[in-house]
Image (cartoon, rainbow, N blue to C red; front, side):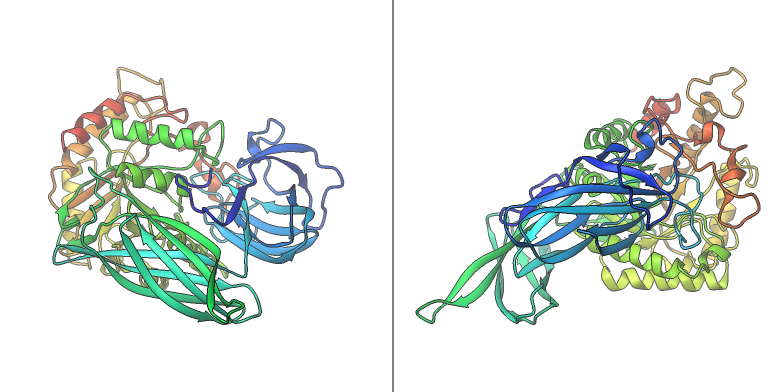
Length: 582
């Protein structure tokens, strides 16, 4: 399943789900003569009993059958973490990062059978700046859907929809990005409708051969219903692309050559002083950090488990999820759109030192991730915050330059959402003036580098940040919590017991929810997740082995539910406190 709504009524699209041939390989030139396994796609190869701990290169193969000659678009929603794509033996695409989509276009592909092969790498190589041993697990495989599409001479690459309310009436800036994949100049026309009521006229256009063209106009929608937490109204924006050609009577005729359907919502996000507003209504973000991880499927979370996660979150009174620490599968974002769940979505970078941020590939790999995240997810009304660079070197001058560069990149693509990052550089951060919302990861009562008194510590930090770039800004406690091993209960309430986690979350949540300037409390974390347990002691960027004494079971155990989604004692405590805010 690619999305929760139909994306095309004209363009032919087929998901390449099911079994693919697979085999581990020793190097990128060693394609297997015989494939050892049949693995499901989407899926992680670690789910096979003979590949539980395999890290390295893997070769996938699938045969595609075409009924006629056509142009093909190969779409990959997520390959973990590096992909080299080959079509009939020729390399046609390369992509890095498990959590963002990519595509490639092949012209004039003949009818018949064709061989699609993907060389996948999930190793921690010197070329990989973002995928390193970390406090979550980097699985291997085609972890999100793969699809093939048939295209004509031009197609609608994507749509950008930015709503804004003026004098109580909804308007929107609508941009269409078109691509001509032939050498010929084309005369085209775009027809667009929002729902059954609004026609969007872009006129006739000429697009040069082998080029992209962005059409952008503002439209007014006086009678639409707003998207909100309690009333998440959504609209289908249907676009059709026509080729204009003269007929036998030398009159122009329109020939439908492509279509694209997007789903949008009308909502506006603002920061005013210490308040976060959606449609001019003050909101409080009550929620969780969530990893895409489950023992039976790895990072290839199926729709049923996505829904289960949101069912449990909503049962606890949550209205927000933070996609820690990477862009999420669009199916999950679609669900959040439909259910009125606010989303903080962030790029893929967690806990990097300055040395790691100065990796020669860091800037480009982050820039690619930021671009692919925003371009592909900009139309989701549920996303109310863009975040970057969780717990990185925001206390260093060179680190600040990197934060500033990435914020500017995202602002150039989308100015309709506030920006933030979660800091761990307490009393040292020099980047707070760059953000719209100050976000703090605080583990009072759990890690020994904080005071055990939640009020005393928070008030000291609040005073400091108001004097260092964070004055008169909303605050989100973006991470807080305690570890607990499911089923470990003990009257002494020692660390790792469910009782200790329950007590601490009760104290922390009660205090944070009472502070006016705190607009969000995001518990770390929703569910226990697997962490990397490999690495080289003492070598930068390979800190996996250092976690064995703080990550029992090779898992981050701070979930309110365990990895199988079984509730811990803290579940009912969080439920009581969150629901009291409604």
